[in-house]
Figure 1: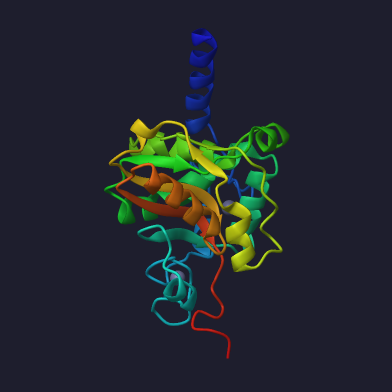
Figure 2: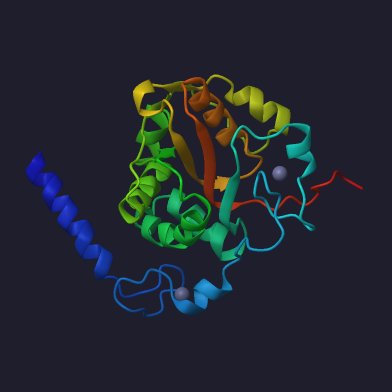
Length: 243
Ligand SMILES: [Zn+2]
Ligand SMILES: [Zn+2]
């Protein structure tokens, strides 16, 4: 087992520095680079006005209505990119079998995490049920966490289980999303969580219901503070209510 792990580690290290094409457009890049400068610049970065709590793009800086009505369970959430254009295509590919894209996704995430969450003591992946993991073959949140952990030298805290399958959140409203998730996460290693400042890592934030439920579970188990970072987030088109 140890031997195979060593080989896997060696292959991973080799791939880290022997990549010659852009993961987005396929153009030639310098060895080890994941995304070419042109694609990097053209990505929909989430660097304009955002809600200071959920981190979603808003038209004018200020706490959005959803966060005002119910403050998120996380101290603050941030995302590097908007879930649009090439960024959403990259995430969809990453979740639908192109596992190797974790390197590109991590590379795009690193600057925001370094800037916003320097006090995080552990990176928490969003768990999947064993059944879902078998179906996809990997947990994209955990794979991303592991890469970020290597780059940031912050440990992965893989101490939560998802025991119950939940309905797809896609067609559910905010309230339905919350009740759909209620009680689906369980902390399996309280000692790893207690008193810690933790950063939940996921690919996309839509309403924040998933990270909120996970944060609630972690805090109940004694976590000191919980943040959330997602690679992408969906713009809040009506941050102050519908006109
Ligand atoms: Zn490119
Ligand atoms: Zn908000």
